[in-house]
Amino acid sequence: MFKPKRVSEICSRFAGKRILVYGDVILDRYIFGEVERISPEAPVPVIKVENEESRLGGAGNVAANIDRLGACGLLLGVIGRDAFADEISRLKPEGNLVLRDGASRTVVKTRIISQRQQIVRVDRETQIEMGAEVLRRIAKAIAGAAIGGIIVSDYAKGTVNAAAMALLKARAAQSGIPLVVDPKPPHFSLYRGVTGLTPNLKEAEALSGRTIRGEADVAWALTRIRRRCRSRFALVTRGSQGISAAEANRRIFHLPAFSREVYDVTGAGDTVVAVLTLALAAGAELREAVAMANAAASIVVEKVGTSQVGLEELQERIALIQKRQ
Image (cartoon, rainbow, N blue to C red; front, side):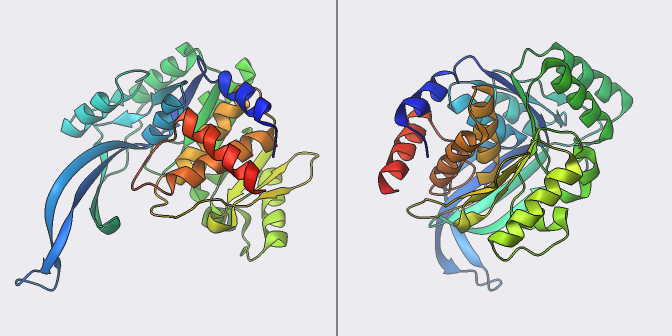
């Protein structure tokens, strides 16, 4: 990997970094409880509720990861004018550029969990409306933000479109900062010219048009994705197989996964793109940034639900991985 001194050097630069996170803002709700019996009304489990929580999801979780690492995630997206929007404002009191619009409804995902296992998920969502006035407000927010990098968190809920991407690309080019996209395959044409993309395995297969069975397939898919998007780099998060990445004029590299026990992969991609982009903005080389993102992902999959990684636990996990190599 790289030396502890270098890890500390990169992490010390996180403080004060401001990263714009644009995309689909989601409210994740969790209902925790115990299943003790089956309902007499239907063959379904009855859960006795013990606790309820709300967390930032989608682009919100990306921004929360950046905040947790001591930097500032400026969150920009579109939500409704409803009680769920109020909850998002409560969860993100600082760096909140999210626009409320009466034509849209806040996207909400509710997960019911018992004994660390998800029983069911209930989604409340409609496509986000992106009218001319909303785009004008988004353009103003993008132009006025003092930032060192941009992340696009695309969950295909309507916030990411050609007009918004054009604004983000122009700002990144003007400021000479990285623009990294956590993509959705239907929007592939929108990503041309970005700095990098971070698809998972399924998304990489859709983006490249090829089934990925081994490292040779991964290498082919990465090269195709990067060339088609004209991006500087692309990486694929491969679950238990780790992360593979390709950069222009460099050899493709693979980093193995590391986790002691996987409980929940929800939001792992959010953590990867957050740590990766923040590290790049802090002066890390791509391989260093990918290694840090890989270590961070190994932590969040050991937690239940959308979660973030603290600076101290990230440094401790990197040190542990280095010892075991």
